[in-house]
Length: 358
Ligand code: NAD
Ligand code: IPM
Ligand code: MN
Image (spheres, rainbow, N blue to C red):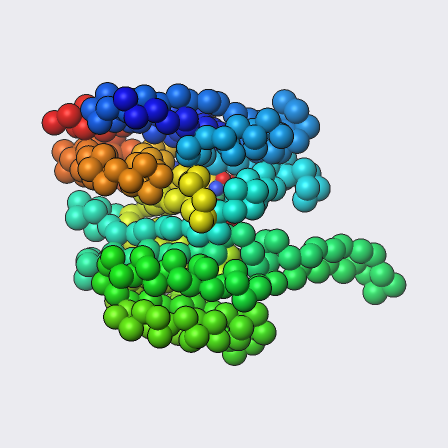
């Protein structure tokens, strides 16, 4: 069998609930496609803080570095919201992404036919949407120098947005390469009318673009992009952008699919390891109720099969299983309507597993 080590980091809130379902799916996929997966569980986020005093314990990082792939739930919650920056659950996410050099965060959004009406947008706006946000993940505002101090003028807080040319170049090349396998359109999103870092971003994109003459490039300012995403989302193919813009635009894109509970992600670098997690957070408002939508995490595992294990067939099988469960009218609470059968998180995972072999 093909042996793979998978680090599993459930985290906080609904994290453990949705990760359980994704692991169920992986176990069935292993049987079907001849893998032998070893799952190693690690602490991250608030769960790690409570247990060890650190959001990202050395042991978790070490285990993840040695694994073939990392599956992550979500981190954060009200319990830790007053912690100082370095002792927040979210710090662990930034830490693991940076340590594993996962600079490319792929966030695809394509609504399933049966969910077109779940979007708050009109059917004709959402139909045909098939886009991917390629978010830079290890630079920008999230990782620049930060400061907070008291002055005679009151408190001052500073966050800095830093990009090196080489950081921009590698994410932009990733975006062009992804576009080549899709509809060959790249929209590079920035705020070049105001930010110096965006002007550098744009000039790097211009320099790199001639290497991909088969791909059509457009530049778009981020405020306009936020508007176009809800005005004519079907016209986008690949959106490449800096860390924070990508964070915000991908949550906006999520609603094109009907629910944030649908959106998966893959975080990749130049090395062999990839990290897979849903785009959504720990959803403290519904945690512990067994009603979270596990699809985003299950589809993240499909991305794992594709990007980490090069197995498109297994990836497709998972996606198909999810589609079949939706076609059969099963929903979690976030997507439920009167004509549907509402399932719990665990029941939903079971249904997907059942459909895998149908
Ligand atoms: P959120 O994504 O956790 O939740 C936003 C809304 O979407 C909530 O109403 C929630 O119930 C709903 N939702 C999210 N995922 C769902 C799912 N799978 N099924 C059904 N409904 C779902 O964002 P938030 O409320 O702004 O943040 C909550 C916490 O999560 C914060 O501590 C934040 O820092 C953290 N967070 C973590 C990650 C991550 O770990 N990758 C991502 C985003 C936010
Ligand atoms: C995400 C989350 C994280 C981010 C937070 C929790 C640090 O919102 O993965 O989208 O902003 O990257
Ligand atoms: Mn986010």
